[in-house]
Amino acid sequence: MYEGDNYSLMADYNVWMNRKLYEAAAGLPDAERKRDLGAFFKSLHGTLNHILLIDLMVLARFAEQPLPSTGLDEELHDDFGALRAEREATDARILDWIAGLDRSGLGETLTFTSVVDGKTRSLPRWVMLTQMFNHQTHHRGQATTLLKQLGVDPGITDIPWLPALHSEAGA
Image (cartoon, rainbow, N blue to C red):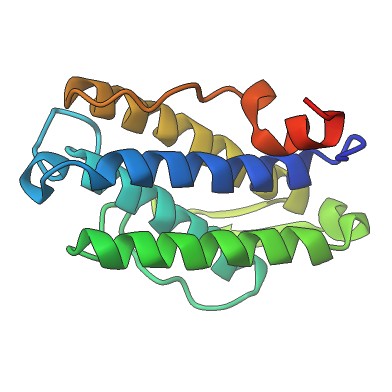
């Protein structure tokens, strides 16, 4: 199915994991999703918001469009339903983008100014694309911990359990 195409695999994994996390989070009262549990972005809601914000920033950088924010902790949506809807729309956008991405251009340089330290950096596009997926996985790991702290088991999160891998293998 993926035949060595790591970016398509990671885009599918991104969708699967986000669906799992948002479904698990949907069963919690809003106050619990937003409770400060001492995480880097304080709460489960804050962590999910941050993942989405950075995805939108990466997409904007690749499209050479203005960034949607100048801060890493800007709240995109206070309402969980609106946050979830934008997450789903962004995941669909990522899937479409990866499906149509010309891999031959990934060695080209992407120059951007960091919102972390204000410095301009120039890196190969493949590095920034890899960073997007790595960033998602890193913070989803935090989100699963926050869910567990809130009494919700998010279930298995490992790539070998990605449903698309099993439908292809007939399992």
